[in-house]
Length: 309
Image (cartoon, rainbow, N blue to C red):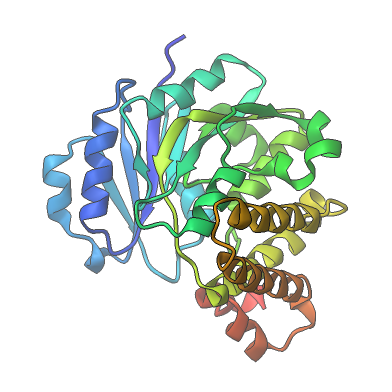
């Protein structure tokens, strides 16, 4: 069965990277129908980008209106395709087969979501390259409720950097939460698993995407990650994630020794300390003063809305 597919991309201050992404999406061997851009702040969007990309359309929201879950949900509900592929503006398809490989996963009716492998950029640091290979291995896998005792929280892992969602199931289950600091993808992926659906990790569907976060940036990111999980005990309650983090640290330290660069172990430890401290504080966000929350978060706009404090 030939399924229709749209692509949804939230954008903010887009530049040449977005033009490259649009060109590569239009060159996919499995054609996408529409490319829906949810842009934050109309004044920041260069309208000339659309002239050379007829499949792209833009819808504007203000910074106050933007929400990681709510804005994506708004875009998906504009689509009438069978599958919507969510991407970020800094993720670049590695080849022309990315969309088709993702869509093939939906030949299995039990698969309600599929996500791509993320490859490191050329400027990616050595330790982050290993983290990419840890989170996005070479082997594909389909995950479901039966994997929870083995994989734990990794069962819910699914990234909107490049993830496809079966739209009829999305609408049936309510889709992304409409108010979230981020992590809308894993929250909804958890709902899928708990409702009996499956998530496909497609290692042959690949995008180039990575960040060289500092230890402080890892702290902020993991603070928000823990906040998002703590806000949704119906999904994450009773499922520990620290064990997966410890396994990554151990494997990363071993990797530094194996490649003959033991000095990189310092970077592993400082980054890991930032992640752990941010995560532990995020779990306790309800007990923290507003000033401390604003100092810890990477998403101050979320907390400026009174209902979120």
